[in-house]
Image 1: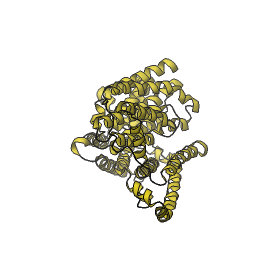
Image 2 (image 1 turned 45 degrees about the horizontal axis):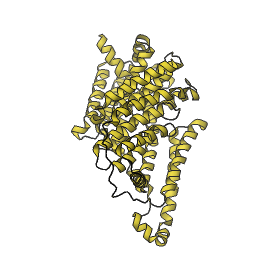
Image 3 (image 1 turned 45 degrees about the vertical axis):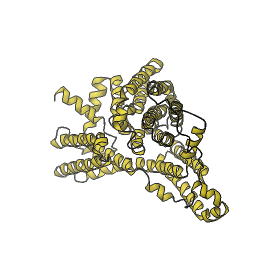
Length: 467
């Protein structure tokens, strides 16, 4: 095999997530890395991702190509395995991959539902009115939303934080596309950086912590490198933010009934998810779904008491437009389903590539031939191409022999490397759906050099402090 081919296969193989096969299935796994089906699967995946990146020009929803690619890839795998006498193996493998997706999808669905509920209760309109009434300009708002994203994401998670701050930016920014675009980029970078130094700030740090390779307090050694990763591109982008102030004509907004209680339920839901994982060792999605039950019961209460409340507060109900009862299932329906289905396609695609056998090849190539430092930096770059979750899955499955400094390095690069491109992290993908037409792949790509400078600076600071 030519060196260029080995490098290409190594890079693509790192995109493969962990697949926890049963012992008998592992014994009968088939190496298809040099089989025509393996090459065909790689080509299909690359083609699908090219279509994803061209969404801005083609106006083709990003979920469509990856969903089709996932189905085709697994059909090819199932056909070859059936020909080799293992017809059940492909089905067993895809079920493990579906379980990984189900946890991610349910977590995201609950977070999106709460965001939609807060938006419908006019929480973000009220926050917009407060910010405008304080006279903050776009540049001050740019720094405020970015700093809040950095500080909130270690406590919650980077995806939920990004969705929340993006909603505020879109409410405040209005029709100023330049401000919304730059603020969304800043939020993605800040949320990913903030989540990198907390055990439960990002799904990748949760996996590293759960694996046991780093202790709880070890993650906080990444605080200063994470700050550097956020500040370097933020300073450069701040000069391009319009030096204007938002219009004040709609600054006076009122929240609908139950808005503050829904905010408290959201915080309780996040606390439930974190507690379920930390103390009971349950998937965070279980805690999030329990929190969705909180919202459903509160929605029932609002609906049952709506008529009496409106009669007692007719003037206020007219003022805030609270003329229809709260329906939680409307908020579920308004979730960004294109984003959720996109994640399905990605997880299934890379799961198929893992089944083809590229993971072992990548481990030998990167960690034995390249060395851990170069390999871990490459992990960060690859996190920009695909979501950092499957990339970190791959590293943890390889389980290379590394010291604490190197494990911290790969945790940092996998967390912040996804900021290099909009499709590299859950936060970026979700914001492309939430701020459709304003925050796009190519709008983010324009500032990739500045983000890359912060990426390299954070690595240098980490090696200086912790190396």
